Structure formats: structure tokens, C-alpha cells
Image (cartoon, rainbow, N blue to C red):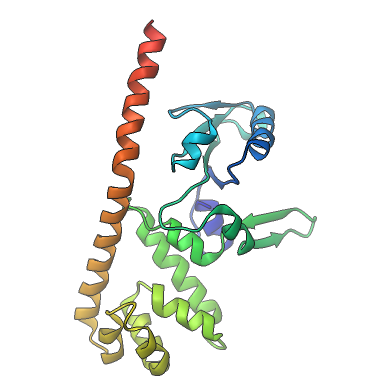
Length: 231
């Protein structure tokens, strides 16, 4: 669900980290613990690798020491801001296979885009690249679902104007859910650019508000862990 998933979708991002969205139940976490043991992974930050923390929206962080993956970081999450439960994410997943038969299960592109809408500066250029890549790969013969996805998510004002004017009826249907499509339909580049910036700012703020209590909890856990180490 992270940078390596972006690579698979054609929005290149070099990353040695592996970000995993996992089913948060005891049996599945036992399987994951066994895999992490094989990777000689150590937890490198709070919180502890416990189901309760994952279900509340925390990420658990590991660093691998097996010679084949020395230094690789693995981040694990199970619950996400404004996203469906894992079972629904899994049902929409994208599965890719190598010629050798290895399979990779990725968050669907719409879900990956949503997961990347954070307060972090580095995520928003990636959201834009993911959407642009998908648009250029499919614009010659798009499905209705793809058109609605682009109208709802594209962050490039020029491309948003292009598709809005190519599909005005679909655009008008979606104006109530994304008002800046009015500027796209009118071809108003500067107002649309400002509206996209404001939309991003609002999304960042929602993410900040979501993480604020979780960050407070992490700080309490850090203090408790430091105290235990001294004690």
C-alpha cells in the first residue's frame, strides 16, 4: 500500500520500505509474526505489535536484519482514515503476477490514492502521478467508471479541464460532489488551480485532525517505554 505499490501502477517511486495493509485478526497477525521472525525483524518504534493498536489506526514499524533484506523497513497498518474495512479493500485489490508465478496483491488504485491523501508533502506529488499515469494509460477508450474516477480525483488542472470538456454530461452529474468541476467545465485554469490547492489543504487538515489523538497516545507510549527501560 506504499511506494512499491506506486511503482507497480506506473508512478515510479524508489522505496526500500514495504508498507502493508493487513487483516487485523489474531490468526492473521500470528502468520505475520512468523513472517517477520523469518525476516529477523525488530520493532523500531511505538506502539507494540498488538491488535488493539492496529484496530485504532496506528502503524507498527519494523526494521529487518536478515542478510537478504538487511535494513528494509516494514510498516504495518490495519485501519485507515476514511477508508473501508480491510475485507472490502481486499475484495477490490489488484493482483499482479510475474512470469515466474509470484503474485502481488495491491490496494486498488482508488484505495491507494485515498491512502496517500495525508498531511505529508511527499504524498501529494505521488497522488498526482498515480492519477496522471492511469489517465494516460486509459484515456483512449475509458470506461464510465474510469471517467468518474478521473473527474472525482484528478489533481492536474489541465487534464481535469480536458476530461471535463470531453465528457460534459458526466461532469455535470458530479459537480454536486466536487464543486471545482464547474471551473474545469468552464476551462478556467487559474480558478481551478486555486480550488485544487484548497481541496488539498482541506484534505491535509482532515488527516492532521485524525492523527492528532493518535500522536498524543504515541507520545505517552514513548514516555512509558523510556521509563521502563530506565526502571
